Image (cartoon, rainbow, N blue to C red):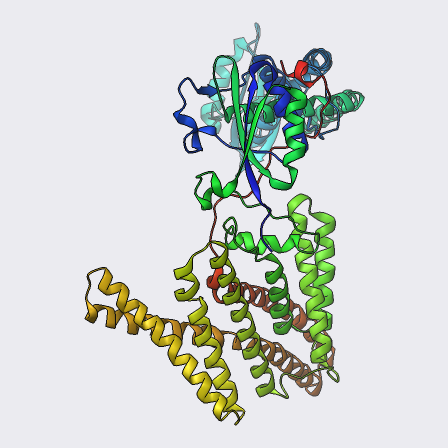
Amino acid sequence: MLPEKLELLIAVVRKNKVNGVLARLLYTGFFHPIDPASIPGLSDYPGLMRSDFDSLRWKDIKKRFDFIVNETGFSPSITSTFVSYSEAEVTLSMIEENIKPLIDLKYKLFEEISNLQNLIEKKPVYFPIPYSTFTFVHFEIGKIKKESLGVFENLFNDIVHIIFPSEEKEGYVVVGVLILKRDLSVFERIKKEIGWLPLPPDVPISSRPVDEYKKEIEKLRDEIEHTNRKIQQEIERNREILNKIATSIEIFQKISLARSNTLSTETSIFISGWIPENKKKMLLEKIVEADPIAYCQCIPAEKTGVPTEQIPVYFKHNRFLKPFELIVQTYGLPRYKTLDPTPFVAFSFLLMFGAMFGDIGHGAVFVIAGLLMLWKLKGSFSQVGYLVSYTGISSIIFGILYGSFFGIEFRPVWINPMENISGIFRTCIIIGVIILTAGIILNIINKIISRDKNGLLFDKAGILSGLAFWTAAAMAGLYLGKAGGILIKVFGAIFLTAIFTIFSKVIIDSIKHGDGILVGFIEGILHVFEIMMGYLANTVSFIRIAAFSLNHIGFFMTIFAISDLLKNSGIGWLSLPTIILGNIFVIVLEGLVVMIQTLRLNYYEFFSRFFAPGSISFQPLVIKAFNEKIEEYLT
């Protein structure tokens, strides 16, 4: 399966029509703008300059809208309709008039709460009278030792006084003393006698108890909640129009981005971008609809002069294959006009995961986990849920084939890996040969498409290397099966011919480059050795599928052995929890390891055979709303 064919659309439109043209193109969802200056030859035309779209009033609308979103927590949704600048301005002015005082009040209340909390954190000393300067009386706060409090009170018997004991701290009592100013000299003598210590200057004094401050904070929070409700009521009354404003802002941003990828003259603007070949007719009609005298040209991607790796790749997959794009794109983007590996990966990934993690119960857990992810995750992240569910289904299928349900074995439909170790190993080697063969065939097709004759024959996954691999595999199979006779000789001749041809090509290339026969001979030996050992290592690597299927069973043999040991030791009540925890351990740890190993086999054994990397995916700019008055709205 090849990616969708793309063409480069170049359109020259009148300046006063460009916004309408771009709006129509973006509304189709099939226009991927590019910088015209990156197109070979186009930037050489005299008089072309960078074009942009800088609407200050729409930037102001966006700034005011963002303020409302940030201050109210409003989550906008893009709709199928939008509003004009005047509607947006009037609406925002009305909402600002109603909510700005509420927002200012909310910040004021938050500030009051913060001040009170800071005061409480400083642990103020409470006295029921204000701590200030009086005309005829003197009030002072300090601390004395706790055991001296009775003596301290007796020393004031001869003068008018009021003593306010407060909190105790580390053996000291904080006290406040109120006396007449005429008795200050007596008070000074008493302070010396009793060992009076002044309070540190950073300790706050309060005429209100801390509990009152806490109650005041609660009241302020209730007032904030009431204010928030008023703000949300205002937002809810205007939700529909705010969503339309959000749509208008998105259109402005997308058109601005598209305009930044254009060049202009005094009267015209050059628009350029990638489009799917099968959408060309429709897109050209949209351009002419906005500007009847526009000039349009569509050039097949491979004829544009743009390097192949810089041409976007556009895959169009059904719902089943869509999640497997994640696996392919994690490795890299395939180059334009090379085969799309996604369908092959869907097969190989599920086959290998299920074969390594075959258990009906564990597969069911994966399916449930995937469904929960579909429920919780949104957007492109939901594809992970599909992928996890698919792996669970594969595990269930292989669990039936292996005869395993949460580690409990029953009669298998196909094979019990532990009872037929040699059989499961042979099967995995065959799987490896099939997957490597698929990689070679995909590479051969890619070389044919790109007309790379040299690579078609002599690439490490080309025809000759493929022949060497297939004949070697056939000879190994015939030898182990104690059959073949003449066939082994025929395959051996083909194998040697292929290897000798590859070896000779290296020597010839070395001579052409002036390196000499000896250098070519050594390089040829190393090159052939690398190919042979590479295929051998890659094939043997698939034994890990069998190893992990046996490992899966081995884990449960250990878990059930521990469970039986607990039963025989008189603590059978721990048996079931052990089995449950063991299953959780296997699902989490082995499930993760098997996922990694499956990716590794796909990436290093399969992808490395044929994958030609690109750099750009087809990402059209899209707006979700349009009407015939959009040009007026954008101006």
